Amino acid sequence: MKQHIAIYPGTFDPITYGHIDVVERAAELFSRVIVLVARNTSKAPLFTDDERITMIREIFRDRRRITVDGFDGLLVDYARRKKAHVLIRGLRAVSDFEYEFQMALTNRKLAPTIDTVFLVPHEQYTYLNSSIVREVARLGGDVSDFVPPNVRRRLMAKLR
Image (cartoon, rainbow, N blue to C red; front, side):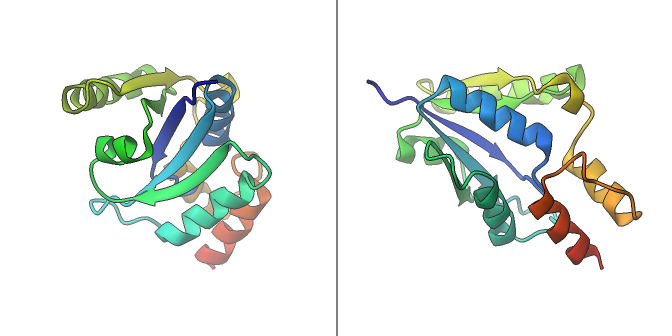
């Protein structure tokens, strides 16, 4: 069987049930999924790279075909090193599409053999993003419906 490796890149600060839904959908379509934690120097994440990687690994620890890694640099270079031919991007709303479309076209120009596949999370997660989760938690709200227990615990500890 030919291996089809897909990469799902993102900041995941923190990972949400919407992200997890996209990862699980991708795992149904591809032989292997790499959840790739971006080291974005233009953002000031709440969690360190290692903290985000650890949380995500805990979530998928029983899923052999899902791995977690970090990266800093050009995504297509990482994909080439891993022999991946698919980049996964989640689309929650029409407002996501323009930016994601531009990125997909740029990546195609840089690496014509790497395709971008857009996946839509379950409708119950379409409003959800990491910024909302951080803000709700920062204001003392319950984020149990938004993130797994391991993420919620670390989020609450970080904000204390």
